Length: 163
Image (cartoon, rainbow, N blue to C red; front, side, top):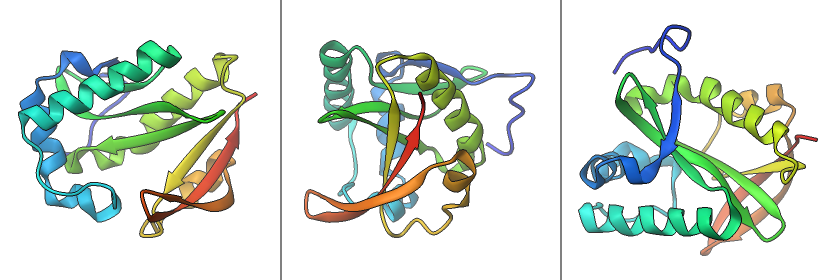
């Protein structure tokens, strides 16, 4: 996809239900996605993508917030957003490989949303230890707080105050 210009064509946050399941399946089946997603196992098909979207829509119903699809100029860039885990809001960002460079801008846009939402006094970022480039998190003001296990996999947990 190449480098995108956010000033002329801003990224729109849309519901995942607006994205074709096959598009999500192709994204999540790209072998490059598994490099930093230890919980991602196997290829996705349309049924897997539909189940994923249903689970994320259930978060919207339960918590009033969840994951979005990121769209620019009508093109699906990836997905991410906030998911409530116990009393915290985890933030995740899963972009298509050609869109990785948009990550910081999308994260800033999502965190601006979090700062305006009184339900979100802080955001957590669970990252696998394979993620080596953590400087962008530090620039945002996030600090590592602990290590946690999800489904037997180790993650580094960072926290960013939003209030």
